[in-house]
Length: 385
Image 1: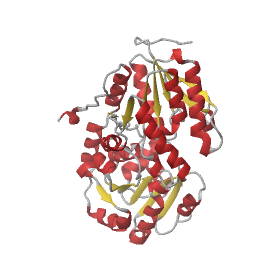
Image 2: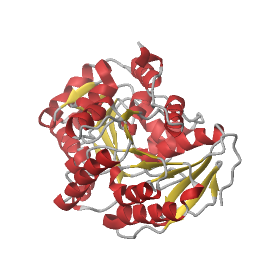
Image 3: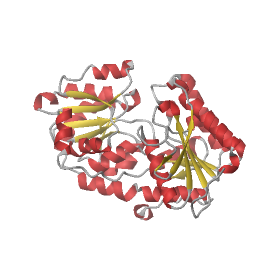
Image 4: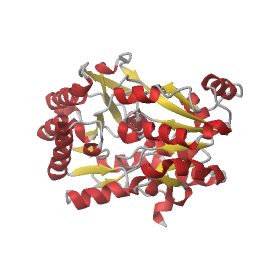
């Protein structure tokens, strides 16, 4: 039964992520930030969550209703199964929802069931998952086919970057709505917190490189650690802190084995916003190696907080950073580590670029326009120039 508490009298479902509270990745953060603003605008929001994520099952979170699907304990099946379960719930209760937002084309079964239910929906496509090295060819084929069929069958499709929008137009002949992500508000950090955090990780302000990422091949943490080792910067007092170790895959174990040598430090994944803020703001340079996808939330956070950003060469990183970033190719990463030592502190210009272009309020307004049947028209002031 639908509960209408807002002036809009519309119920919006957010599907395809692990849910709330947001403690996993960029999509969860996006759903948190967007749905929060929907509630402030008077919408009734339901966020679908996975029981398989192991979080405490709450009924509400900061004004959003939470619905749960079982998912799967097998990581390889979790997204597919939870998407089907979510789509089935939507189909059975199709009169309860006025609009559905799906995040990630890998949720294809749920997206098709939503189409069958005839509920208006929009799909945030995510990146080019079929190019990720960690996936075997069956999943790559599944994701590529899903992306093609979604482009063919679904009216409202969202690209999170201009480069991704161009790709969909070129590869799938699909015009998509451009809506990126926003940068988070900086947390209020107690004065004694920064020294405690830095001491815990064993790093000195301004004397360490930082990479915060999942330890997967397409994010290049092993390549970055190996390149740093070749520079011998550890002998000059620099450190390289990699944060993100979580699952003991063979790839991740190779990185873990490098910890404690040649200035390399490897730490477990952490989702504490204050800890991550301290690490970003006090590093010498943030290293961004995510090579597949559009506007990457981790890159936006680095721009908003770090004095320098060294990112992988490519249309997505270049679109986000513009002339304010430094770029590397895998084969010259060691030289890039050395080269950025002469780069001045760019905190001010990086922050200004991030804040002017990537604003959560503007993002949420664009999503609301889609609910109202209008073009997204994502237009912070800079895009109007």
